[in-house]
Length: 260
Image 1 (cartoon, rainbow, N blue to C red):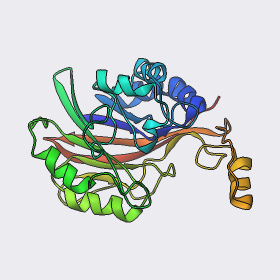
Image 2: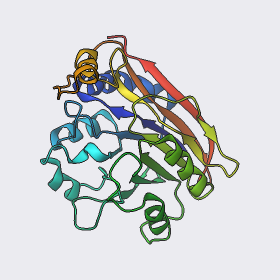
Image 3: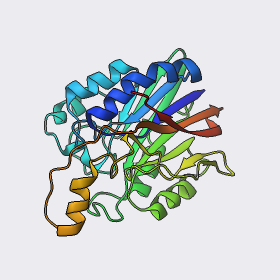
Image 4: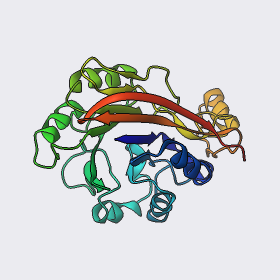
């Protein structure tokens, strides 16, 4: 089975890159499933129902997220009503949405779990490691499907610790959140695919997807800035993972330039 994971889609520029490139990517690689992190798809902060629907219409099967999924309150009811958009599973009970879903297409099934790290982030949420244990032992997991985890975390150490913790128990641990694609894609000894960060889909002539001026000014002066997504040197970043018998066989990094 072949799955493509697309890194954080940043604003309208990232969405337009997905619209232009995804058709040719599907034709070339013929994935069975496409997962994308969409938590920054609405102007770089959050996601709204119309934009989620737009991404699904482009051919994305499952949307994952992270800490910014809460930035637009319009998404809350959508998270409750549509199982193919996830929020991190280790938020406390009682909030909208779910952190795990399964999807079957063409007699193939995939399970996706969304987790969020705590180091340098929100340390009041539940432990992502123990949450993973709980979900992997629950009835929600389909035993006959490869399990993909979007681990949305800041610290490289926390991401690498997670793949060691889950090694051999899941098909893939894919890091998101920091927007910079890392060069450490690997298959572990126990056949789990891993990358510290899949990168972002948006402008690389930027500061993690946003126009450089405001980002530089914030570092210089320490004052709040209104960040604007940039539209120069757009690329789609992610990984392509092949699985067999619910184990990872290969992982290939994707960095595809948008010629528009």
